[in-house]
Length: 295
Ligand code: GDP
Image 1 (cartoon, helix red, strand yellow):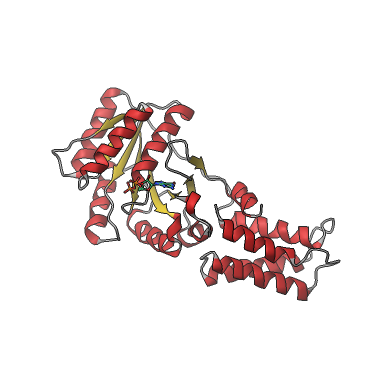
Image 2: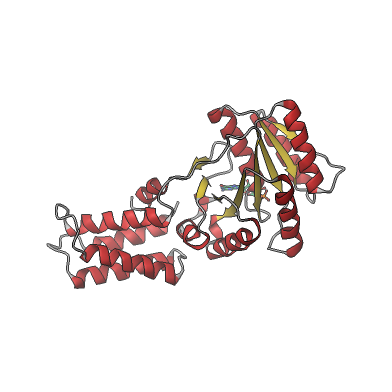
């Protein structure tokens, strides 16, 4: 995960090793390399520039911690700013309503169905919830089948209706069934397309408006970099979602989406997915991610 970014930041921060003190000149040099590392990681130039301006200001500021040598100090400042860029605090999922409804949205292939299964398993095993998964991808019978297989694998009920092509009705019937059966969390998987289109947006907007979810999560493939950020913006304009799920981090060597989404849509990353297996799901902790990026 983020191997390229790790290597480049490591190299950039290495330039201060052995230096006796922080100076305008050596900070400028290091910061330039950090900016280059971020832009190579597919962070937009503006975000990278703002980031490095803050780092520079802090390194040359009056409140610097004098017990650290220049290299350690720069690592600490970059670490703290990376964590801040990714949201700072961890943001938990709201699951206290009974039932809580979680709507899962995103493009086709982003990993929605896989994530829905993972989240159901996580809530069942770690939070002791009785979950109902709802197959709302009415265009792809294979997706409905995929959810049924996952449900069986993790021991979670799945609501599916192959005869009905209306996602709003499906969601409503599923919620009625969940209330009757005493499910306390309902996860609604939805249909996506390969690219943003008006019909898909209108459909998900209607589902969202009708079921009034406790949480709406936007799922996005982190490997798509700045496209991920643009898609995040488009879905946020329509759904005003509560959180982002970044998938396929196991294949993402650059990290641009993880670093920039928060600053662009101002919504927290809540989960990260790092593989195809049901266990490959983690709550997102900005601090821990910053630790990882800096090795
Ligand atoms: P959907 O169309 O959004 O429902 O996407 P799927 O859940 O069907 O996922 C699309 C493909 O991505 C499948 O082959 C999944 O196994 C794979 N996938 C999903 N999440 C991850 C992940 O975190 N890492 C990797 N490597 N593959 C993933």
